[in-house]
Length: 257
Length: 334
Figure 1 (cartoon, rainbow over the protein chains, first blue to last red):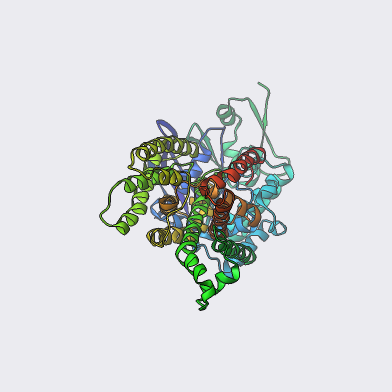
Figure 2 (cartoon, each protein chain N blue to C red):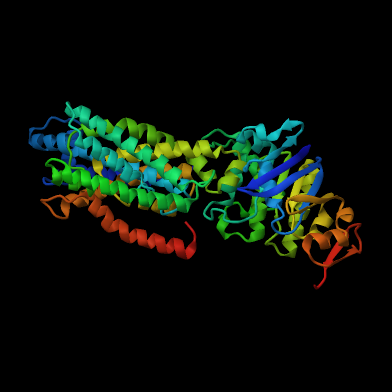
């Protein structure tokens, strides 16, 4: 479905991604993990086409995705950004309707079908009660759900999320990941999530890719990737890895230095 | 789409139009204005008819169009740069347009109307040249940070204003008219200025009225706008050209009128929400009404003398600007 092949990206003279390759299938959640500055957000931005590649390709269903027009790209791949600096005075409804942009003309006139899709997107993330609220009044968790609803309104087969749980408390982290997991199952979405929380990544994803300094250091199931040696080396920190008490995934426990 | 804000704005605009036609050195009762405009033959209003048709009506039309252009381009610049303090003056476009207009005024044209037509064209060339120059100065690689843009705009603005003042001091005679133009005053009468700026306004404001959706998307930042399907370079260029066209038209005959492009979109946003598909038309209507009202004040405060309307807008606008500045700083919310 989604294949990233040999992706290299530079900001000025600093190379941020080195020859990164990965692929995800429909119905699968792939987590990107790695320390700050490893290139997780850059990978999402470059894949969605907002920053240029120095090398490599992005391939969706056998097509060269980055050769598509901006509008066509937005029909294949939606991004849930980190909830920073949203224009506060927009209402939730206005925000989610913008997800329909790739199907609208320059004027942005929406049909009743578009409104229906936006409403059902809000329902899927359990945010119908927020419709009339302003984005600036929402909590971090509510903003994340609204951004997810906007991405769902784009009706794309591929979804990328950039640290969606970063400012959320435990309850919202779990409920957001549960919503995503359900959607992957019901809509057969192809999902890539950048995550800080290793245990959340282990629990909710099918496969994990560890990025360090812009390179893929390990890829596979959580059990394969999250070994004490690999994680210690990546994060410069001694860690213990123990089996999860009732799921077949690892639990990573950081140690004191 | 809610219709009520449009009705309020239209009614208010209509009231200011009537006021603008009625008030002046000679007061003409609205009833007489109505008779003249509907073409009723009445010898008692013959003097009123002359004043209304040859003086007040063209002036009202020019002020109305200028105000609409300032309000509309102000809303567009604020949206484009995601900055509540952006307006045609801040990014240097108005000064660039003014320089173009003054250069055209200093050339002796063989025909009067030809000269009139040349002014907005020269102003537009000045405005576009400014946009590209300021854009090029502010650009780092492929991105144009807002702060760079505004700093480059302010610097260029000072430069263009200096040349403009120099040209005006060296222009033959008509110094008073030139100074009044610089302060923002439309004492030129007749229909020629209105006809001369009409094509620029029709194209500029027409494009802006269609750009609401694109501006809404741009409020979420470049990344999100693109990920939602907007081709940002194309949209930005189009909106920038259209807003500059409108600014050039406004500056051509009405000079440097500050603050309308800042205040009106701000108030409209406060009252009627941030959706640019609504905000742009409302800012056109509001800008026209606000400038008409300022122009009426400019005619009456020092009667029988007129003061340049730019003085009125600055007197009300500058304190408002400071209030916006404090509010934007305190709340980070607009």
